Length: 534
Image 1 (cartoon, helix red, strand yellow):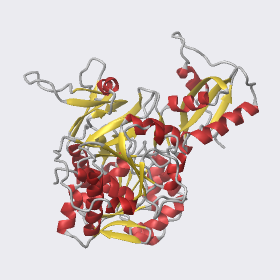
Image 2 (spheres, one colour; image 1 turned 90 degrees about the vertical axis):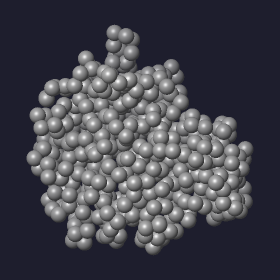
Image 3 (cartoon, one colour; image 1 turned 90 degrees about the horizontal axis):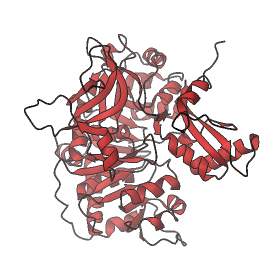
Image 4 (cartoon, helix red, strand yellow; image 1 turned 180 degrees about the vertical axis):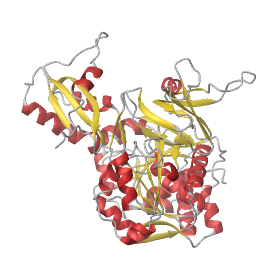
């Protein structure tokens, strides 16, 4: 087992240099070639003067340069920040300065959208674009601008990487919080290595596996597709799909053996025709980003009768937490399962004691996968990362566990079941969406006086976003206001954050504290997206 996450590539390259590691469209990089690309990127970053733990952001769709950048930053001793390619300038205007990004790897097309944003990032020194050449007219930016080829050629001699140990940070993954801007979850090398080894062990990953990476690499589960594969010398296929049918075609084309997806995608895939080649090659499937509907699980069992189904639950703050083994899927398909290897999952009541069977409580995760906290946010870190409640009183209680905010219960056999979230986070299409971010976009339009975004049950999305607004001083209620707010949200927000429905009201209800009464709104609109029985 490697100590540092980038060593999973170098160890596999040493053991099987010619084995395929990374596939993208018509390209195939062997482990030796992937290791060379990672070393070239690391050397280039060191040549630019990147310091230990300094941040390198990658803002690109899924392509080989993303992988080179992520592991190259780790190999240099820096810290990588993968940014969801669906995010727009508004979100990057928070992320880039918040974690003091020093180097940004992106494309000319995306840089043109960020021309105003990068001017507000005082720590950002170099921007690397993956295009073959710079355009004749480049955006007016204060940073040094390089092509990826010039970047990799900028360091003429190998540089000594910064010395890192397993508890040093190596990544920051931004995830939406229940309020405000996205939070940066800080991961150590130990977190990532332990997570990769744990998941690979219960999935039974081996060098012959070929994993299709359809999840964003900015997701902990998406990033895991890389680390899990590289740890065992397997290969990964990078894919940004347009239609669900494209995923099935890729399974056939590449002989995919492992596939992870969010429930909304599985809801679509279950109804499509799977060719015999796909049914034969797919050894296992997993879910992430929300609970899998039982009906979807049963449909996939019928479609893929020889494929193992692993139902999983996790948090970005602690990677994966639980999984339900395939032999239990028919027995208890609504269960989250039990703790993954090298983790302990506790159910704690409001008195700080472990719950009895069937007693609801908060899920608490302890072990090597617990992240280091939130970047530059000690207050929120203290709220979520707290001492573990089961340490013996005879030793100092310095171990921090993740208090998930999820209400669960455990049955008499130790299997866990999800009940609800304690906060107001919206989970839609596998994404965690802050209602505040959606509301702030509505306010930024200048058209509304009040706004409330809530997540409501939806058969296909898990939850759909309903935005309720009241007219601003210069606006009038009606269809025109609804359409204007919709247009603004589509311009300013990534697609998964755009409300499904906008309702214009004269007033929004307030609770006794003078805040918008979200509970009342949830109750009033709970059936909005429910399909009436035929």
